[in-house]
Image: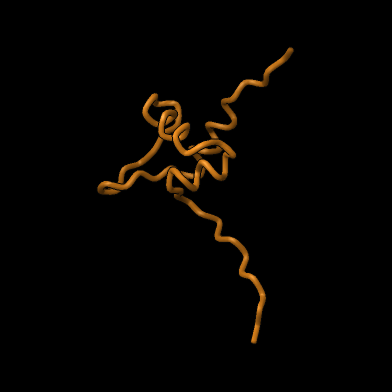
Length: 67
């Protein structure tokens, strides 16, 4: 029996819960960012999905904090 683990799929769309995991933030924070228009999402029926490129654009838009 083969016990090899398959490589993760490079997703194009993420559920908000999956996006939260990728961004290492809370699920409710992702929903707040979507509601505020900071994180762009797409609706497919009743489902919300976040494009990978929109996650990358969000991360790129974050300003570094200097103390």
